Image 1 (cartoon, rainbow, N blue to C red):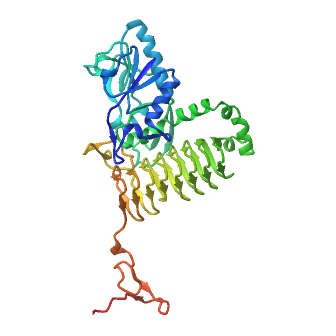
Image 2: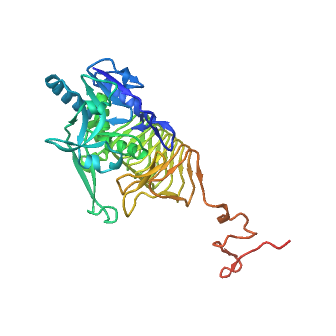
Image 3: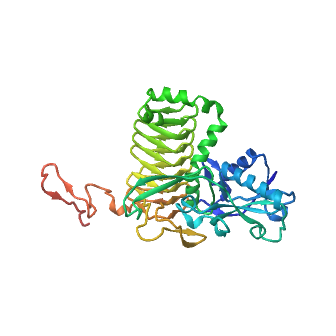
Length: 421
C-alpha cells in the first residue's frame, strides 16, 4: 500500500512553525505520521498537491491529522474490506461521543450524518481506489466510521467547573483529531496517551516481558496499590525516588523524579527533572524540562528546556525554553460560556470551558502575572510586573503599598521620602 502525506501549509501560532513540527509525545507530528504508516506496511511519500497522486489504491492523509496506530489500522482494514466489494473511496470518521466532544470540540473534524450510525466526526484521511485531483477528496469518498471501544474515568469536581459534578476523561486506543491550533495539540497528547503507552510496550518486547519482575523489584511489596505505583517504562540512568508514584508513564534517559512525586499517564523526555511533591498527569514533557517542587501539571505539553514554577497548570502548552515563574499562572477555566481562542487572526470558540493558555518559544511569565484562559503569548515575549511596584532603594521613596518598620520602633511605620533638591 502506498501512502501520501499532503502538505496543508498550516502554521501553529504563536510558535510560527508548520503543523508537521508540532510535538506529539515528544515526536514531531510529521515523523509520527510516517512511522505509524510504515508500521502498517505502507511506503510513505510527501506531496505538495493532489496532482502528485499517481498510484492507486492508496492512502491520502493530510499532514495536520493526528491518528493512533490502532485507529489507522482499523480504518485501513475496514476500507480494504469494503473496497474489494464496492470499489468505493472511504473517508475516516469517528462516531461522536465523549472521545470526540470532551475536549476542544470546536477544532474537531467535520460533523456529518451517517445512515445507520448517526453523527460522526470526519477527518482528512482517505482510502482511494479512484481519484480525480481536480475535485476535493472529501467529495469523492464516503464516510467510513472507525470502530472503537472507550472507557470513561470519572472524578468528582465542583459544579462551577462541571455542571454534572463529574469530570469525565475518555480512554481509547483508537483516536484521531486534526491539529490546527495549539489546544488541539494538547488534546492529541492527552487522549492519545493510552495508545502510545501500549505501542511503546509492544515495540519494546524485552521491557514488556520483564515488566512484572520490575514491578515487584520496584515496589518491594505485593500490594496492588504499590505495584500500580511502579508501572512505567524507563530509559537508561533514570532515578525514581522510592516514595514516588509513577503509573502508566514512559520515561526517557536520565529522568529524575523526586520523593513523593506523582507521575501518571505521562511522557517525560530525556534529562528532565520532576521535583519533590510535584504532580504530573496526562502531560507530555520534552527533553530537559524542569518541574519545581509542589507543582501540579495536568494535560500540559512542554517543549525542550521549559520550566514550570507556578502552583498549578492545566490544559496548557509551553514552547521551547519558556518559563512560568512562581506565583505566575495561566487561568484554565471560564465560568460562563466557552473559552475563546485566536485562530487566523480572529476570536473563535473552542467548545470547552476548561482550557489554559500557551507560551511561545522563549516566553517568560514573571511572578505575579496571570494570563486569562485561551490567550497566546508570542515567542520571546517577557511579561513582568511594572518596575514602579518594585522597591529600588530602601532609603528612598517606597511604593504606596510598601511600609518600612524600623527595628528601633517596631510599632511605628516609617515612610522615607527623597529630599527636594
